[in-house]
Structures are given as C-alpha cells and as structure tokens.
Image (cartoon, rainbow, N blue to C red; front, top):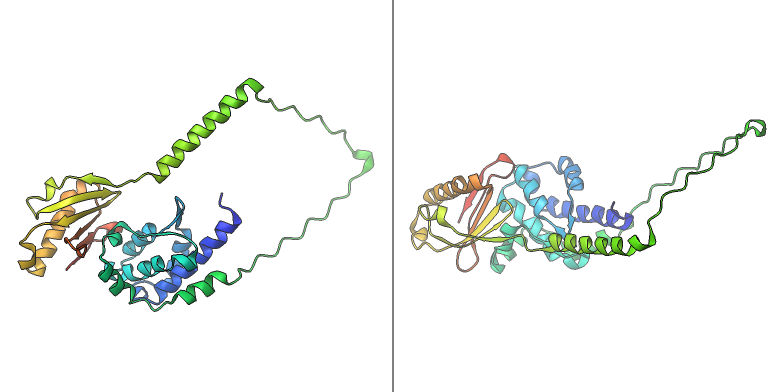
Length: 267
C-alpha cells in the first residue's frame, strides 16, 4: 500500500503532467477532462523513478500522434528538480538527439517556476469523520468475555533462519526490479527490408540504428512502406513499436501499433 506522502506526490505529479499536456497540442486530439481519470490510475512511481512509459502508451492508445505526445513528456523530464524525482522517458524518446529534444520540448509553454509553484501548493486534506458515539450497555446483560485463543508462535531456533530467508528473497526481488530489461537483438528479419544495426529490445519496443545508404534517396511513401513492413515482420515476436535512428541519434522512423492503432512517422 502506498504511503500518504507518496499518494500526495503522485497527485501533484499528475497535476504537473496535466499542465504540460494542456499547454501542448495534445488537447487537439483528446479531451483532458476525460483523460485525467486515466492518468490518475497510471502507476507512475516504479523502481524509484517517475516512469513516463505508461503515459506514452496511454496517449498513443488515445489516438495522440507521436510528434504530439513527445513534447509534454520531454518537458516533464526537464523538470526533474521541481518534481523532486528522477524521470524515466519512454524508450522511443531516449533515442532522440539533444537538438531534436530541444525542438520538441520548446513546443510546451511551461516554465520550471510553474512546476515549483504547483508542487509547493498545499493539498487540502479531507476532514476526519466524527467518532461514533459509544452505545450504552446494560450492566445486567453483560456477558463474561471469552478468553482469547493464544496465537501459535515461532520457535526461537526457527526465527533467525526465517529472517535470513526473508532478507534473501528481498534481495532477489530488488535485483529483479532494478535489472536492465533491454536485450540486444539480431536484425535478421529486417535484412530483406532495410539494413539495420544495433538492435535492442525492451518490452514491446524495438530500437535500431539505420545503416542503409539507400534510405536518403527514398521517397517518403517508400519510407512509410518500409516502416509498415518492419512492424509486420516483428509483430509475431510481440513488437508493437519500432524506432529507427541514424548515426547521429536522430529519429528517422517512429512507428507503433500500441492500443491497436497503427501510427507511422518517417523523417
């Protein structure tokens, strides 16, 4: 169960996220009033970080274009100080070059001071319910309280081993949660479509580096067709998002079928 402090911080994080979304192009795609309850239900705090990947997937599922979903999330990343938390971007945005990040981030008209003021604003606490009045009891009808059964205890010689086992399990759980979940991936399936290198898989997302000299000479329609073929080629293995960058880190393909909606952007 979340602590009251974490619950309050989560509410403020969602407030900050909503502010960034409101001052971006996202409201042209989805009504924020209808989106807010879904944002409240997203588990943002994961492994000691403010994880925006679930928000990214939610926005894409709601029909928000990738180019429109990126700026508010990049803005949240730039506000780590005022938010009081380390922010983890979706894998697709981590591949952006610094120049591309700055271009997209500039589309959101939110300043660090706005976030600081929001985070420091007090949250009204609900008034505690009045205690119920005690019911009078009739002395003549009091029954003797039955003795409480004694709970079985743990034998002293078993206590220490059980504690050590608990510590060991806790260590394994912590390692499992904090491990690097991304895996290198051979790009054999794409070779007949386009030459890619340095494939990396994390969950339903696949990133790779473009290494095909023919790419720049292709028409945009041909590039989109390649992106569609890549999604189709890797869909049987569970891939729902393909992000291709060039040698400089600039995104050249950002395609996904998250939420059952196919969105393809090529550059």
